[in-house]
Image (cartoon, rainbow, N blue to C red; front, side, top):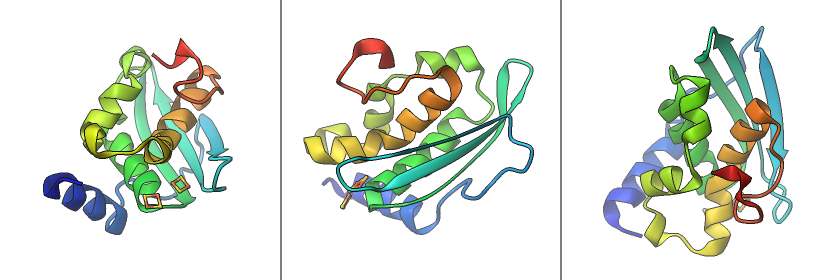
Length: 133
Ligand code: FES
Ligand code: FES
């Protein structure tokens, strides 16, 4: 893994942003990676048409947890429509996509699955169906 991405991911893993629970969340959703059992939970507070606040919690590998932290920063304050446009490639690019193996890509996309399933009710794994984009 390139040094920049390695440091970036480790920093988010060690100092996770927006980790915790949101009392009075409008949306609470959790998914796990069936391969390893790692799980991520997200609480989302909506205001009008945008994500006013988001918190996540979970346990799992470095990439899944760092990805949740990074994703939470990417979408906080964004409109629901903007988040709908957010693709798995957008997130993978933030994480240094070309350095991840297929198994690690599932780790990286777990957080996006939770977010999209919570917001739009999509429950297929990225890559299995196109509805993620
Ligand atoms: Fe190392 Fe998932 S086990 S990133
Ligand atoms: Fe479980 Fe990465 S090894 S999500």
